[in-house]
Amino acid sequence: MTLKLGVPSKGRLMEKTFDWFADRGVALSRTGSDREYAGAVEGIEGIALVLLSAGEVPRELAAGRIHLGVTGTDLIHEKLALWERQLTEIAPMGFGHADLVLAVPRLWVDVDTLDDLDAAAAAFRDRHGYRLRIATKYHRLTREFLQGAGVADYALVDSQGATEGTVKNETAEVIADITSSGETLRANHLKILADGLILQSQATLWQSRVAAYAPEDEAALAQLLDRIAGGAAAS
Ligand SMILES: Nc1ncnc2c1ncn2[C@@H]1O[C@H](COP(=O)(O)OP(=O)(O)OP(=O)(O)O)[C@@H](O)[C@H]1O
Ligand SMILES: O=P(O)(O)OC[C@H]1O[C@H](OP(=O)(O)OP(=O)(O)O)[C@H](O)[C@@H]1O
Image 1 (tube, protein in one colour):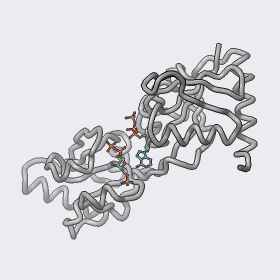
Image 2: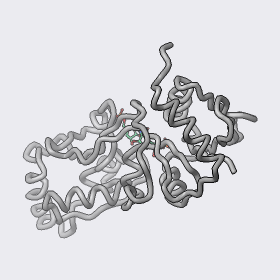
Image 3: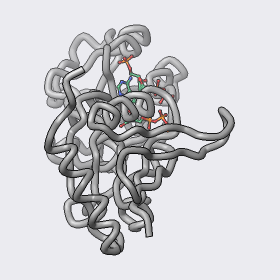
Image 4: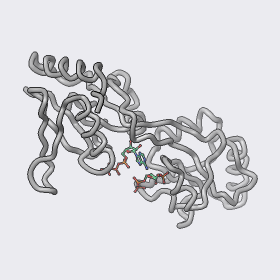
């Protein structure tokens, strides 16, 4: 058996994940051609690299097909209702910081809080005959948050990307999406509700509690946890 480590296969999360492990004496690399999803781990024996989409890491951890995985807190909390039973959080990694927020058109001058949104949602329904639409890919987290806030008069619209564009495209009035620099919200004339922070996320290393661990996997894991406990080497 080998200990399977799942990491995002491309983009900002992959590069920063590789740097984070390198700082702890574990070299992750992509092997083969640019387009081949194959990788290698050097520095600790018995670990295999699995390259996959950040969005699929939660499912693979929960199924026990990978032992360790890197992805954002947002994706774990959204996709795994029972994540605390299925996973252990090993280490927040200090990058991939993003806030999941509720945002409304900047032109809605009377709507700055969840209470305002609640009132606006009722007025919207009266005026238009259908519910205020909130576009998001974070269905569970958004529903839970709005339930906690007592906002019920809305309909979720699925948006798997370019969510901020849905307001201009008139397929939604409100969005729940992640923001980092805030540029995308600003460019799309949206503002965050004052109490509209749903979740703060960052890239995190998770361990599956349901995967099978052979003795050699336990040994590789112990070595890796030692390196992580030792922190980043001074560069
Ligand atoms: N602008 C951003 N700044 C920082 N972190 C971000 C940003 N956008 C997304 N993230 C984080 O990166 C992780 C992956 O995001 P996302 O689901 O958008 O994946 P992706 O890069 O589109 O890859 P894939 O489509 O393969 O899943 C999430 O945890 C998210 O919080
Ligand atoms: O606050 P900012 O720094 O502008 O970043 C936020 C944007 O980044 C992510 O989009 P991504 O680039 O992953 O594309 P997507 O919308 O297709 O998911 C996110 O969905 C926001 O749109």
